[in-house]
Length: 100
Length: 314
Image (tube, rainbow over all chains, first blue to last red; front, side, top):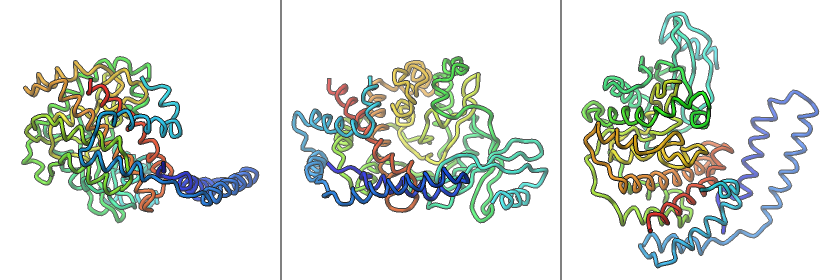
């Protein structure tokens, strides 16, 4: 299932933040150098992600369309909850563990 | 930038003015703290980015603040609207003393006494807000529940959990109540809190006309409990004294079912809000990691939606 922002879009946002907002504030030469190295490493991740095939979200699109049309058979909520849990385990596992 | 602001404020306000300090704030509005003749003031000014749709202009927000102040709502005293403050519109109001950071309001030990008072105090202020005469703020529009669908469609990403929430809301709508002036974002984080409880209601940019219970229930949304989910009213306390007080003051008989309905609606609205914030980043309108990550953290809200739906189904 594809997620927005994609992993690549997230690395891009972090690169912009580091280069645009953090780097200009660093006077310490060692910190500047290490930040540039970190950005370079993140750029590698960014390009590596670009090489991956685009994930298919046709199934989620179809499910969303069906619910919008009022087609909500028994079991829909259970299925949707399982999908949300799987996404939550990536995006915010501490929230899932702490949910009560 | 600071020297320019100081000059512009000096020209607009006169008096003896301290150096303005830019406070941390949102992407669409700036907040400057400044003292004029010893009076602590806050200047709310448009930021560089495009104004978010469905929010009030600063001129109209100022007018709502004036109407709320006239109605006796605890708000910072509105002082002056300035159409051109160093090139952008702005208004000046009193700077209230107190805590606004939600996480601190719900956790700080020194604010335990304030938390005990907040449920009743929040109901007091909301009842006054909902009694503001519509004629006083004729530019406010009614917000329909359907607008959430339009906003979701503008994002264009499939989110079955949000669709399921919207579907339930369509199928189970309670009888509509007479629309009133609502704050639109009435929750912990938009309230100034001091030792004795509620000091003032801030951030009126989402004010509109709506079902009063929608406004009443928004503070129940889990995301605005700031990590203390067992206290259903904004992480500060129980819901019952809040609703009882509100009902006693307004004469409305808000039922628990109605509250559940609008709590779900508040969650659906915020889940979509996370996506529209993300879209501001992806579209290039406001590039920011904070906005970007909201696109992923919205799944926390989706999880709350499916859990609420499970409870409503039993």
